Image 1 (cartoon, rainbow, N blue to C red):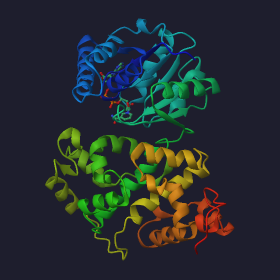
Image 2: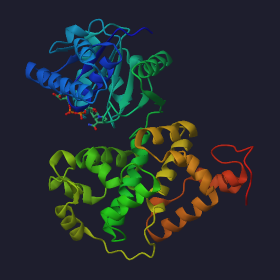
Image 3: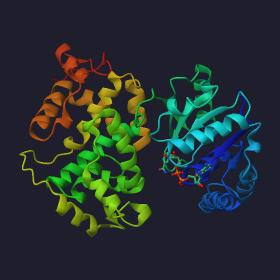
Image 4: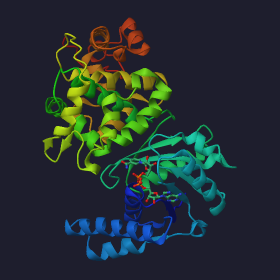
Length: 408
Ligand SMILES: NC(=O)c1ccc[n+]([C@@H]2O[C@H](COP(=O)([O-])OP(=O)(O)OC[C@H]3O[C@@H](n4cnc5c(N)ncnc54)[C@H](O)[C@@H]3O)[C@@H](O)[C@H]2O)c1
């Protein structure tokens, strides 16, 4: 499909930034906000972002003006009559999204693809409100979209193959890389992040390690930042909101730790509220007080190691594979590209092949016995162990290693 004009609904954090990404690839964008003041606020945000690029020497002054000229802010959906694709980036509330999609179906042509940037709501439910639900799809950009290369493409149950192909083309055209993910709560990347975040918090609460130790351990493993820094960046309220949705679908293993609920109550929301686990460069004393009050003091005998953080993420990746959410290489690619899983370890499934399924399953069993049922190894892992698919050392794992030298 030849894209000429793209629509954006919502000019907040994500909407304004995606508008900038789309205009940067030379496409015309019309961006809708609810009133003129909000349009101006979004335009100011976009101008400042382009200005920062110019200040850093990434674009010329002419380019800045050229790109800004491609963007038209509006308070009328009538201007969407000739757009090829719309990305909705309004608040994460199903009722608002459904209303926006219904209005969009009326305002656009029958061929227009209608995409949602939701990070946790059901695309299939949004699609169900439309007369033609085949053209609805999820396009999940990560924050900040200007920097993050990955976009999850999430077809609803109703989405046509043509819509999927067109959405993938669009992602490529705006200089991003896509993974097509079967719809599930949290989609792929956030679903895998959640057990990692929660385990970091449970480690704090049972007194096995402190915030800085845990963040340092994750960075030593090779992540660009530790789990608590990342939680502060995403926002604790956002995590609780999506965590509740995931708990509803996956049950108790995804229950948000009570610490997060308490942080929201105390307005320790992370960077956006001026403090979460950290306040500037220091550990936030207010969060330490909360942790002290909530400490479980469960004296299990497992000393903290990075495995406690990483293995639940790997286990969830295996469950995703079991559920055919994606392929091993797409899961690994998404985690390396989306959250900076260490490139030298190849992604959670490649890393499982390095550890060996037997050793991974043994450790998960030990954690499940000594810490919590949360670590219960997935069925597929046990099946692979039984079959002798033990990763690189057996030349068979999530990948095959026909030419590897077996050093064991
Ligand atoms: N912020 C993130 O880190 C992030 C990352 C990935 C995806 N998302 C998703 O992107 C979407 C937007 O998130 P955000 O952080 O940009 O939110 P935001 O609150 O910054 O922006 C939402 C914008 O939508 C506008 N809006 C509200 N109701 C509207 C309506 N009926 N019609 C048109 N515009 C309306 C608001 O004025 C606001 O500018 C959400 O679905 C969120 O889950 C957010």
